[in-house]
Length: 283
Ligand code: NAD
View 1 (tube, helix red, strand yellow):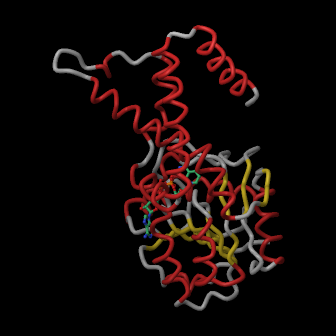
View 2 (cartoon, protein in one colour):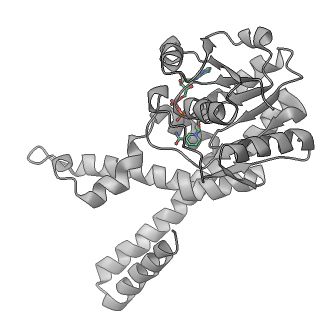
């Protein structure tokens, strides 16, 4: 079905996608585009891509039938602008960015009906092509965010492509996507970064609190090891939903603080039990 794939952004996600794609479409040739020549060299060395370039206009010669945008979301607009100046009317274009909403409509403005927004709900705190994992998407959800403008044919092809990589495809409105993942993904990352900041501020000259990490602290803060540029872009691109989610969290934390302050055994137990019951429903 696909003969030539171009991945723009040959990092952890782009690399994982290229590896998974190659497994499903073994005869496909893969071109990687990245601003970082080291990432391209590494990706070729690891067999993730067949060839690479730091120049976007190399796409013209390559004539990809699929382009995957896998850079931090803050770069999407300038990349889309560049892509729109090339003649790519025969290419399907999709992305795996963590924010959709406004970005999807902006990308459509530049790229037209052959663009289909996507977000695989798979990943880790690691970045860089050297951490790529060919099995990353197997059994994981992949949210597609078509709009009224999206070509039904393009959507069908992108859907089938993700299914062949082992993902469980679900469609969602682009703005609903940002509300949902602002709460269940972006907020936990914000809290993890803030928790590390709080522990840094609670450390004193006489004691470095980071010397005593328990299992809970390590589990809870693993995601604070994620790439700062990627998360800066996500927080800013989904600013409204992230701020609302942080406010809801501040309220919950304030309630917990009041219960601890008042020492009301029953109410404090109820609060904790309710949270425990909700958590246990997640598999
Ligand atoms: P990464 O840092 O591992 O890789 C990003 C790559 O993009 C790097 O190689 C970088 O050099 C390149 N790049 C940056 N700006 C560029 C530009 N203007 N042109 C070309 N290349 C450029 O990051 P990642 O974890 O692979 O994340 C990539 C995307 O995937 C982001 O949009 C992120 O929101 C999304 N995503 C990440 C995860 C995750 O868990 N890491 C999960 C789902 C979605």
